Image 1: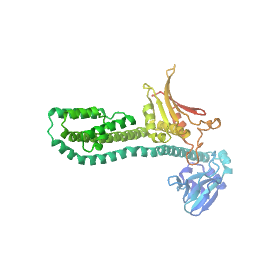
Image 2: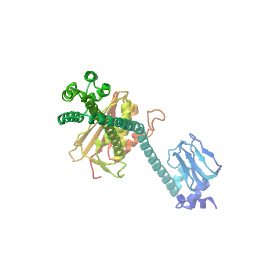
Image 3: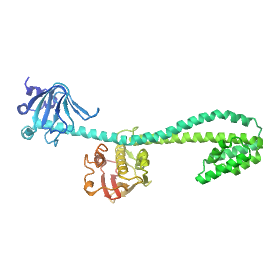
Image 4: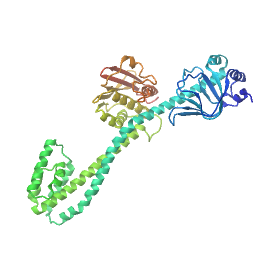
Length: 466
């Protein structure tokens, strides 16, 4: 079978006139590559448009999920008409014995002039390539955003989880001592009014929670209570002092109990009170840690919108920004960066794609953190611009006190692949994708910068109908 008939069997070339396929075959070279042959080295100029006739070719991006495989006869790769591709970014390798037609780039201009349908096939291939590449880098940037959050999330979740495990273990050990305290209390006969006094004082302190004391105040109160317990011959005073101080008991409270409870019953009563205080403290620690876990999980769900659809939704801007700050909290803490958020409570909602906008806030805040020294500050504020024609826009300002952006760099920061970060620390796609997301919402973004102050201003239309 001749090469023209072979090309006609491929879906890519089915509608191309035979004369144009003949033009292609006459100018292309039929090439054979043995298994494992490197057809083009990384960094070497790509001079050929390649049509796979048989075999298998792959482009190795260096990672398991970065390998592009061409194994369907008729697949098109290499240089294309109107493409600005100059050199191979990654090696192009023949996986098996492979046969291909290769057309040198010198013939591409003539192709566009004389072979309309054939050129259309090649341009369509380039469009598909751009679309697939765009989808890939957008997904990569999403994963990069999650990657920036993952380390901090692991740390933030580990703290409350460890607190739950620690407090649960302490509570289990503490409950083993409860029967002894219970027997000590049951062994005494307290008048009803004394029982009421102990219950009233204990539950009042439990309800009131822990008072706020300075280190000096706490140390002084601990000394006073320890002295009182020693003076009244209370057993194991060191085990009681910390819990009594923790819940705000004073010497006056102990005097009140001592005045109404007989001396022989005082140790058992105070032991029972402290036993309940310790139980309450451990339960509170578990509850607070569990609440923190719940808050983080809720923030993750809200951030990713993992329990919702993919369409446009009502945007609660404050909630989304606060969720993003929650997930970046560990990174902020590491550099001791303070944040302030000023979002009016009556800010109107608008419709958009919350998962995409969360990428915007993550990228802007994360970049601000990277640009600031230890102990910096990020300010986030929004304002509503209600215009005379009835249109309305929400402006969100993300301001940091970092080193600023130099004028020569400022004009490039939204360009694809431009980055000032060290090799491997950034793709240079973040702000390009941010700009694309904002354009998708029919908004705009601009930056103002000077040494010590950089401000990104995001403008989004308040229009739920489009």
